[in-house]
Length: 459
Image 1 (cartoon, rainbow, N blue to C red):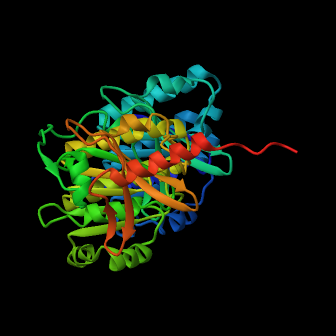
Image 2: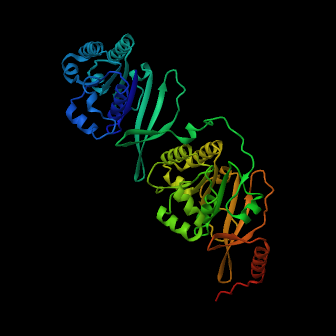
Image 3: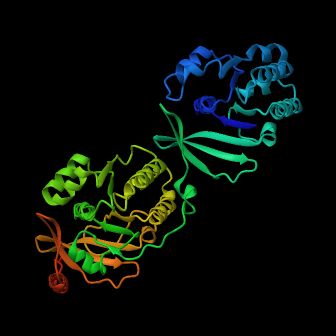
């Protein structure tokens, strides 16, 4: 016996109806009993808009019954007699009692209500019937909560101008359930639950297979700087200010995809049309791979969905297509989608661990607010611990001209080149200098300007 509790509108009736239709689809007979004065025709009219609703199963496999009059006129005893009789007559395997609060208010004392719950449990055991009871949320522990086998809470919370819904299992006897709150959405498919990524993937979903060797970044000189390319099945942060070339580098990384190494761009900001225009103008080889299906683009806005929805969608595509090269264009979008920003670090750590376990080489872009210089002010706390490799892009201003610099901060198990190089974005994408001479001269000139600079005296 299980209780599902939540405020009106949280989705209790939808969830229990969804459970009923799932069970009747596999041959279980279900009975949906309402204790409130709710019109069944109106309720089914609302459910008819949902994809799981199947009117052909009513009433042979799923029957609806109102017990409002029994509770009103005969109290809990009359309700028990009705339930016992109908469960046995219909050979019901699943019973939903919607509106348990009505039965509780008809009880003279808490003890009487506890006895009612006990008698319900006896019916469930005797008839091998699973029961779900819906009720409104309460601030204190109520008697029935201590007696049932499971307790599920549906909650809607407001965060500024946003509202998010979450489901929490607070009790489930004999089960190692996922604790904590998990996001859900109510759509035409019903109630869809998205367990927290950091909880769902706290442990690898399959035995880890060590990946050795490296893969090309798609840019020859960057491979040289990295020390033979990116470590296979690793995560690389590509950090830099807006407009410096992060997306272009990501596209060149995807252009190295192959039939046995499919690629995916998981994008939040640039639409597929704009990305394709950039590809056709600079990374022509990627266009052919998009057309052949070797590479796919999955685009969504950063505010279009919940954090765990984005994570679930990403992993589903990766697993379904066997993706081995992944470019996430805009890590800060995950941060924006998080109702609770403090989750972002643990979320992305669990996500990248699962991607690594799946053998995916991941490159993600992260926008920095510092436009000039080599400082790394990252918008997500402890972001550097979420990547084994870090590539830093930054601008340097020399007189009236902006120069782009690239440097490697760290690479897993690699003797990488720590010197800075200049780079430009040309007709074929990002082109990096073969040596650090130009960067050395540029930085030396800037250092000389700095030492010789005399600030004007105030007037």
